[in-house]
Image (cartoon, rainbow, N blue to C red):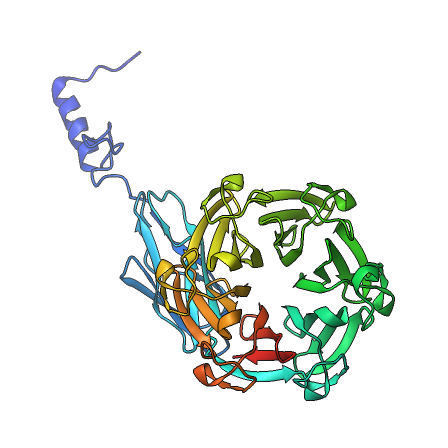
Length: 453
């Protein structure tokens, strides 16, 4: 049987419940919590990489919350942000002699902790030029430093410990130990090139016909030679043909030897695919490393021009060098005197620096800068480094802004002098490679391998 309460008793119970916070929902929808529901808050963080030992970088979030990072590791800002807030991570103070850039650094309407902000630091290259190897008079001699000889070195790549050089007129691939300058021949035989330079094989048994562009993934080298793309296993010197048919120029897509190239030159890769400048076809080709499948990524075979656009709507005029930061390709469009950018996700082609048909040596931003036969190109992820061959200089381009400056050499003044900045001299510099802290240049005219720090 239910016990019946009178009105006075009910009023007393209601008062007690109100005093202890019990009872029904509050008037603000907070389920009885008169202070309102707690607001969710989230942390902002990520990872720093490339920071040199003993250096530190100061980061900021939303121009207020500062954090000093002194090692390559994960970081998290002390302050938290409320749900649906925005964040913007920037570099407040750069480390000495390094430049750090932020990716994935902004967002809005957050509903979870953010941990994917990436801060990448690279060592600033000041433009101090030295000669790593080569005697300056040509020839094909193994040896140490100036005792070694090259014969028109044009392509260059590095794995951080060694520099690899395509020695075009000797028909060989050379190896230079960075720490000692010791030069050896990895594959090919000097003087055995031209029409017979197409044989696969190991070391000296392999043949190359005017080897040109060079790229390494740390395990293998990939070389453009004749109308083919070759693969060299660094550990053994074993050479095979990945794509193309020797002595048969063309622009056909296909697998392996069914694909045709017309003077392939520059080459780079992202670990899965290779990208090749097919200079004679005015196109950029893509090769799947695992299968040798070749397709045309951008450009229209046989049609030169300077149009920006997507895929086949974009036009090039003798694209020469190529490099990648894994999200975009960067190409020296040599006859247009421009530097082009290709977004890999969309195949959109834009002009980053230079003005089509404008020959010169002016520094500036975007179209205000000018070049004279830009050939080699490399990137550290923040900057591009370009061999401005007919100006005999090395140029630097800030990717984010398109700002162009002269890193080393003096336009119109050729030579082989080592030195800093404008005091250094080059003679038709071609290939460029970087290990993140130094540049390596195939200085073709005087048959030298140069190092820039």
